[in-house]
Length: 380
Image (cartoon, rainbow, N blue to C red; front, side):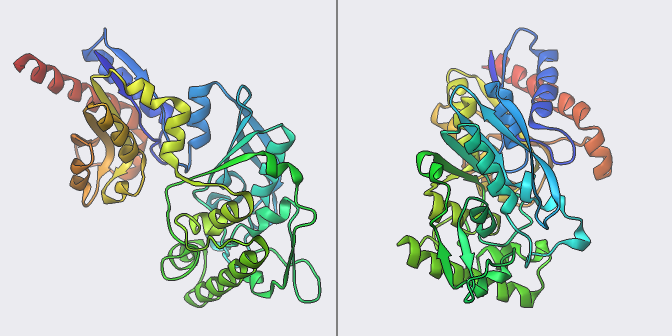
């Protein structure tokens, strides 16, 4: 019996590795002789670096960078020395979790620190950089990151623009003369689970601006500023990517990575699956168990269980989901390679209790799944 365990992290509770370990313990209670293959996963958001490093025996680096509002923060990033690959979670440098709710300001927050992480990766000799761009506090179109890499954004008086998306409305000239030449030698990939365009009613400002502190009026101002930035970039770079899927990810960092770095947009779960060798692990498996904190219709938008199920389906392997909660519309996933889904809680409990009890609950549900599977196997 071969079982692949490929969950995402459970937010505010367990890392993907912790989830996989707990599931494995539960399965082993029923199947002590089973081959249990753990592949901790992520979808380009929180936990991406940890999952990849756990599977690939990489290194964790720490770099002092500028946070979203200018304060110095210590950001971690992953390094795979054999392939000279850097894995950067932009949230480490420019993430919403770095800014207290009362201080969030989408108008002035900057991705400059993310650019500094890219520069650190270049200094380490990176030949490939994977940008995991979820959880941002920013709405600057990636302008700050590009400034950290040598791009000069100037107003009509030739002065460097202030940080943040709102200042982009004053952009008069883009000076590329001092952009880091090493960028041209590096393969960049965007790993994300958001496919919004840069501007418009489904763009970065309209959809994600409010959670970053933008008022309705500021959302409109930011959208116009990003539109202006995109027009100037198109003139200088001779390409217009503002409407491409993923350009609106991370407050428009997806746009800058596409436009300035030539980075293709990839579903985050697919990038992680490639690096951790999920497809090889699934081959010949009898069962795949995946999971996430909340399993609902939004999982269809490129979340980990959806991506894992797509790979398992190609190999004809059944997939079971263990989730903290089953939300509205989760049954739609049954048409996309998920065979069954189970919530962890066995009775009424608060969210805090569920998070604290997650290891035990995962062990119990995994054991339950194994027992049901064993009964079904006997019948056949």
